Length: 222
Length: 315
Image 1 (cartoon, rainbow over the protein chains, first blue to last red):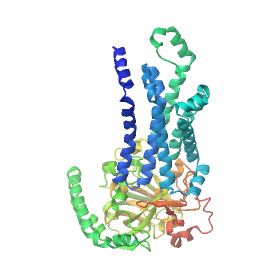
Image 2: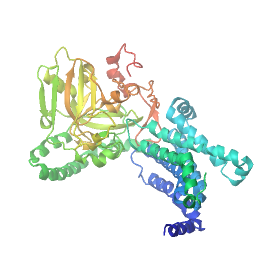
Image 3: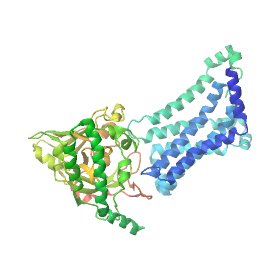
Image 4: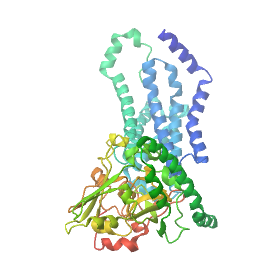
């Protein structure tokens, strides 16, 4: 029964429409934000709200990208892996939009002010750190780059996505006033995703896998 | 561009009457619904709410071209009032649970004649319209036509003793009416404070209205403090208690993050918030940022209150 569902889902994910569909879905928040910006829907301070929304979506896509592998392992649907790169690139795209909105609109290319922010304001330092990492990962995301770097070096480089995720969450935690819940929800989701991976790679998990070979045999490690 | 801006601000006087009439009708409708729920509201509505509409403008920015009044919709939908949620639109969406009638403000402490004012008593003070700049600590600003009266008028009535040096303010504490108080964003109830001479300054007012009408709940109904030369968080909303004290009273944001929010919190472009610059601000509705003025542009009137003080230390 469960196997049947898994096969149906896998087939859907492998279809040639799956990637275009995810691509379009990932564009929707951007389209919606532009629509709100154009129609006055971003409220009294549209610039601040635009910066906020693009930042939130960057963080959301980053967490979704980080969730792909644990989800693949838990559901034993290998086809999920097809979408990881695209989702990661969308995280970068939203982060780029976030930075452009801050630099180009909020600060209106006042580079001195931007530089001062980066070196003086820890939450911006941390946010920019996350952005630099995402830029490097986006630049090395092609098959050609995987080949050029070699699998091991490429994987090592792309492990820094966890640093970007942590930095992105802290960026949010650090910028709000008072003790607010939403930034900690993002941080908790990030911590949960990391915990899942650690559990998956732990000696306990490996022992379980060894003992229950038939159930888990289809799932690959990372 | 400039002409258009000026034309809009000049048109204000003409617009006020019909808009005010419209709003007063609306408040009668809203009041009618409330009267059904609470009962006995009618006498309150006909008097004070309409009196607020008649207030004469006594203070306004010298140059309306530089400081046009912020659209009312922005001032009533972009608010920090964490008692109703931390999102900017939360207060306008959720402040309906606040009951502003009946309402009492206790004034006590180091005073000769402690008094309890009903909101209807407070509405009998001669009301003025004051068009003030409001500078939020988050580096955005507005220009708001408040309706109110000098805080000093209330303080004089209770006859401060010689021991009174500070004035402490407190917001209503009732999580049933203010659901945000169920979360530990700040130590509730919200408290604020001024030095007595700051509180007695003629620019410090208690506001009961804005834009020619009674205060909307999200803006601190039924009565709030407005201290235009300080960051907005000093201008405590929905006040229920004013206590004159010997010692500097604890204030909400200072207790929460003392390194970020000082007791004085005078608008000061030279002293940054640790996490962001205070050198400039965006006037809500503007595209470009503008330079922030010392004491929010009220230095001529208030700078002498702080002569000899190190404003970096007493931020």
